[in-house]
Length: 320
Image (cartoon, rainbow, N blue to C red; front, top):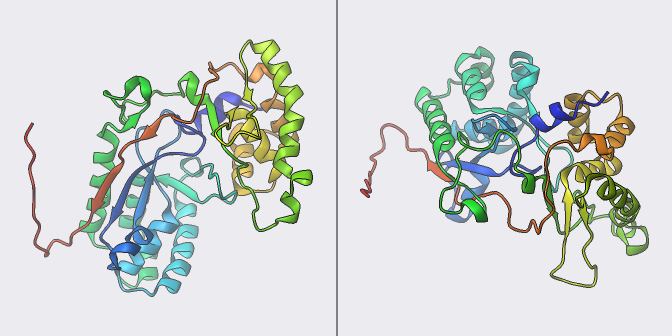
C-alpha cells in the first residue's frame, strides 16, 4: 500500500524542487565571474523540518579544494567520503530532492549531520590528508542557524511578512500543491529525434493525462491540470504535484529520484505508485488550481562568505 502522507512529509513545502535558502563561499579563490562554481548551496528541507539541507558531495569537493586538493582528486575523494558518511548517518536522514533538469538527483542531508560527521570522522581526516578547520565548520553551522531564522519565503499574500524555515507551514498551502510546468521536466534535448513533436514523450504523456485529469476534477471538484494553449507563447501548464511525480515515474522509472519516491512511499513498484498518484483517494491534502508562475519563493536567499580567523574583517552594523 502506498503511504501518501509519508510521501508528502518527505517533499518540500514550496514546490517539488526545493528553493535555495543560502550559499556559502570564500573557501576557494577563483575569478569573480567563477565564484558561483565554488559556493556551497543550502536547500529548503522536506516538509515540517526547520533546518537547511546540504549536498555533501558538492560541499566536500569545495572543502577539499580549500585544503589544496586538486579539483579532479577533490571530486573523487568527496565521493569516497560520502560513501563512508552513508554508513554512519541514519538512512532516514538522507533525501533525494526533485531536480527539474536532472533525474539522478544527489543525496542530501541536514547541515548538522554533515558538520557532525566532519568533526567526528577520522576517515575523513585521512581522506583529506589533514583536519578540516573547526573554525570553518563552525562557520557553516552558524550560517545554517542564521538561514533557518531569516524571513525569506514570499508569495503574493505574505510579501511584507515572509516566512522563515522556522515559521514555514508544516505542509504545503493549497496553492503550493500546484506546479508551474513551462516545459517537460527531465527533457532530453540531446536526443532531438526522440523529442520531435510526433513522438515527444512529454506531449504523449500529457495527452494521456487529459481524461485522467478530467475524471479527477469530476470527483474532487477542483482541476488538477491546466492544459496551456501550445500556440500561445505566454501560456504554460499548471499541474498538481502528484501528476508531475506521475510523469517522473513514467519517463524515468529507474532514476535515483523515482527510486527515492518508492522508498519513502512504501510502494511495491513504480506501477503501484503511479496508480496511487492518479487515485482520487490520494488527494486528501487541500489544493487550489491557480496560475502558479509566481509561487512561494526565497527572495532573497542568504549569502555568506568565509574569512579565515587570521584575516582582517570589516564589520558593518545597520541600525533600524
